[in-house]
Length: 420
Image (cartoon, rainbow, N blue to C red; front, side):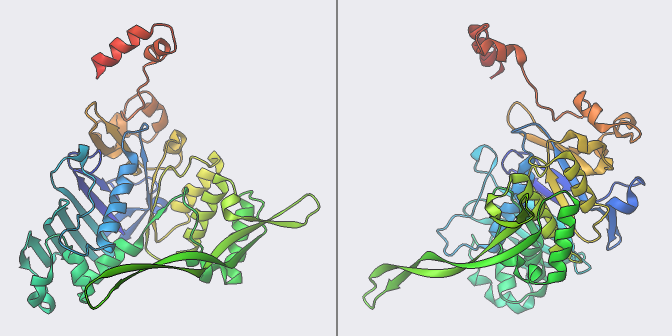
């Protein structure tokens, strides 16, 4: 379970920001439905990030995506650059700190690096340091790999090396980052392979179908179909003289597709490929299937603009899935649906991202405001947000827009220069 993530010098986050799933102290509203306790820490089941377009909401999710890639995909040589995405493409180090709970233990993983090297890295489990490095000085390492530190390159994560060498704490941290954090992307065709065991069980499939029909989706059956798809396989060969050659071979690989059955006017079933369904159907199906498949498992799900293709009533259903009907998982979503603010949410669940004129984003929740009037829960957050109380709004210069459209173009150019 995620406690918090600290981000610095990543995309629009030039300065250090903290996104927290720890419940705010002394908040009692929706305590039973919207929070749970893990290792004596009360955590939020879900959080919602609001803000204007291009303010940096999605960059919180991108931070997790980058960490997953850094941890899961190691560099293969010392000349290979580490993946970076710094603020304004500067050359400074980026840093991330993850605090999370897995199997009843509290992990803290810290990484500071640039494209050339890891400058600091550490892993702590229940306040005990598993490993700690500053560049190529390994201050603390497990005994089982202490003699192998010369094999760790400057551009290689010690977390990856340690888990490859069966250090239990590193394996658990690696597993949480790579496997327990899932990014649900509505714009990418679904990978049906993970769903094969779930939909292979008729009871699971029937529950899913009943739920979808209860939500007013005309879906009466789900079918997984295998097909062969040509794939190009590249092989690199090296002969005894050191000459390198490549060969490309086309092979057929098994691919599994999801088909959904609908009924026509005569009551007969017809099938549609998942990719041919509407954006709303695809997203809701993906959310529900992911939740059903992971029931009883502690996991973190990240969804970008999850409400965009959904009717507001389906969005309300999703909120109940995330909070009231969920007892083990966490959800972090970005959204423009301001009505969500007034739908059974706590002030510590509502977050904002606001970008200044220099492109630097701030990240904060309603709970961070000192003013009691900002945090009061007895009247709507949406109204206060639209009044500008919380910031993070889309600032529209209507006179300039009108000028560009022909009323006074020269005036618009002059104002744009003065604002730039």
